Length: 175
Image (cartoon, rainbow, N blue to C red; front, side, top):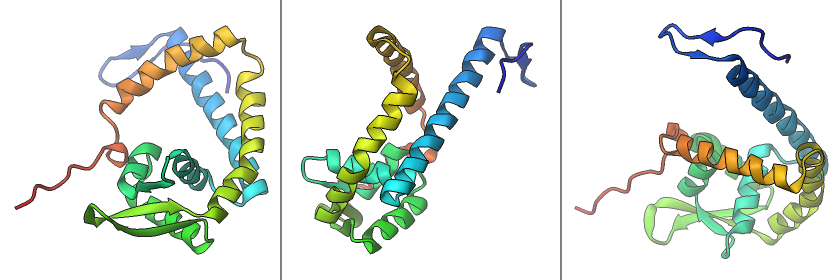
């Protein structure tokens, strides 16, 4: 996708200037290219989708290897029904188990199995290589700090009004 040649405006009259459009299109293209390469590596090495990898990685990062399904859905910005389906596929493959949450019978806890840890260990080195090679290889350490410094507040701003799939669920009060 090439850099836009003129500013774009919305029906409300708001507009993006040339630099904003260029930054937006570059970010979208980088994101798409990186995700495509990551997805390809995950499929080839681990027979995992991107969302399945995110689930396994988040479980692997948990001290207990377990998390509530709603917490996972909120973290990966994926629909709860879609996440339930993906977790079912992982469970069928023996990579996770699902059980009622000990603190809320309506909730479900998902736990990484030994086979899930092994699969994560199989795909992680290649995942790191793809991310390092495509995203970070052309950046200096200072550029990486700058990039993080720019993206973290944007992410935090977007998380302050997340899409429904990323909103933490409100717990019902006890009657």
